[in-house]
Image (cartoon, rainbow, N blue to C red; front, side, top):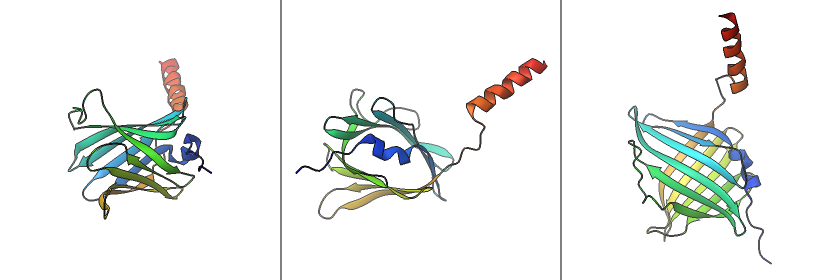
Length: 165
C-alpha cells in the first residue's frame, strides 16, 4: 500500500514571517497563505549590513504530491539560475511539524528540511546528499510578531488624517 502523498494544507504552520539574527547574519523568511494550490515564499540574507542573497520560493501541490521551486538572486537581483529554469525539489515528507524535500537534479543533489520546534521556533537545514551527507547550511528562525498596524488600521488612520485636513 502506497503512503499518502504530502498535501499543502499540512504546511499551514509555515505561514508568516520568520527571522534569524546572529552576529554574522540576519535572515528573514516569509511564507504567504495557500491560494489555488500554492504558497509563495521569500528569503533575504543580510551580512555586515548588506544583502548577501535573495531567494523566491513556491510550494506547489499537484497530482503527484508537493514540489518546492526556488530561484536565487544576488544583491543586485541578478538571478543565479538561468532565466527559464528554477531549482525543483520533491517534497518527500510533510506533516504538522516538518517537511523535507530533495532536489530532482544537480550535482551534488541536495536535501532541505524544515522542522517546527515550537509555535515560535523553526529550524531549516540544507544538506548535500551522499555517503555521508554533509550539512551545508543551518538556520534557527523565530516567528516574528508584526509590530506594524494592519492594513485596515493604517487605512483607517490615513482616512482620519485626510478628514482632519
